[in-house]
Image 1 (cartoon, rainbow over the protein chains, first blue to last red):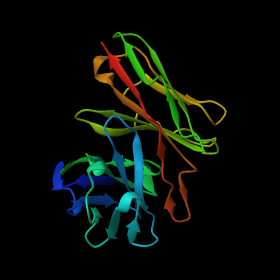
Image 2 (cartoon, rainbow over the protein chains, first blue to last red):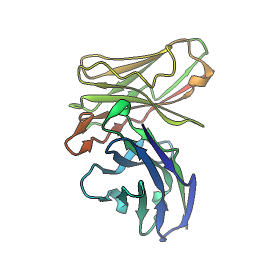
Image 3 (cartoon, rainbow over the protein chains, first blue to last red):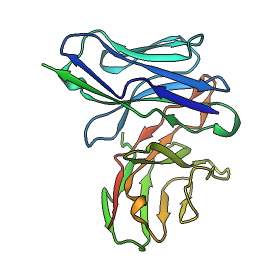
Image 4 (cartoon, helix red, strand yellow):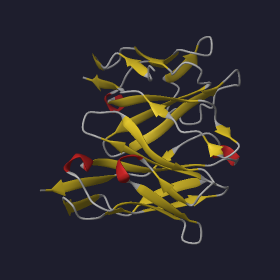
Length: 116
Length: 118
């Protein structure tokens, strides 16, 4: 079985300050992990993915995430927030075995607000 | 290149009517998925198709929901006798395959169909 917990439903930061969006996962098999972003009234866009290669993953728009197996975490970070980063972010896990094979399981989402 | 497209973008229907939602995946993608996004439920997996294999229907919420994929490309999600709780955004995604040597392939999402049942 696979599951994802996003630890914060809302995160608010000032422009130019660091962003941290927290995600913990549960997986019975070696997972693939993703972060997707959804801007208001827009579709889901892939930010980055982890698929058993490097544990530090760099994505688009300056975002990165680190896979920590011992902590079952995949937190998303960005050194300096921009106003255009305001959106909802989803942490996603995909098991590569068992009954969840091929399915994405989404976290509940974290809404990021960026203040000027 | 062209991304995943869905039609219609918005659909308003009366309770009890049937609706069909269409998805055109990215050319060359063998895997196609349907999800539902609704307030209070987040994003839920509904069904996926992979090549010529039998689809995984384990996420369909009731037997009023069905989907087919013709010719390994276009897919149609059908909801019969719609209920108000079916109101949601229905998202389609496609990927090269379920997984490769390094893990799952990323899924590319369409813009969604917003279904409102009155």
